[in-house]
Amino acid sequence: MVFKKLQVGPLSTNCYILIDNGKKGVIIDPGAEPQNIIKEIKEGNLQIEMIILTHGHVDHIGAVKEVKDFTGAEIAIHEKDAKMLVSSKENLSFYGGHEVIQPPAEKELKGGEIIKIGELTLEIIWTPGHTPGSICIKADKLLFTGDTLFAGSIGRTDFPGGSYEEIINSIKTKLLILDEDMRVLPGHGSESTLGVEKKTNPFLR
Image (cartoon, rainbow, N blue to C red; front, side, top):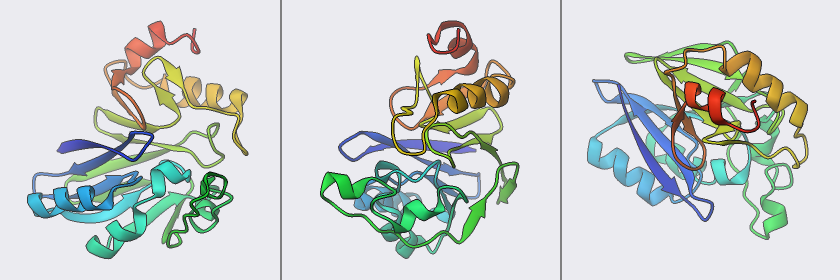
């Protein structure tokens, strides 16, 4: 299993390409700059079978259509954020003056799913708080946390549908119970581990 991180868009969103040894895999959060994402797919001769979105804000979904058109990959998002793909007000792009509408989800997640693609096994963990349908994705010792958990911080909860109580509960009851050596790969910024966050993150003490 190999992953590559691309920082895309004005908010430097982390887009991840996760593949197995046979070059089958997924793209997590293609937020912008579709030409750069597609370039990586072409150069690696990758077979992308699914686009998984950790939540529905515009900076995480901005390149979905172009990547789907190129790869034919299935679009997956939690059912509670699915409407954000098709509504510029829900995904917040309307308020930035650049309305983004994406194709609807083909797979609406609930949390708890085990997704197998090639040699990859991905576990979907529903972690509401940043948005009602925020998810994290566990792949062996990798934990893709979207905007739920950052190195030294947590996701914002002041957007519509956000809840500070929910995000703290999600992190403490669903993420911090995992192995401390789990690598935290967030939607923005640098990586960490669950052990480091448990000990040093000021929001989790």
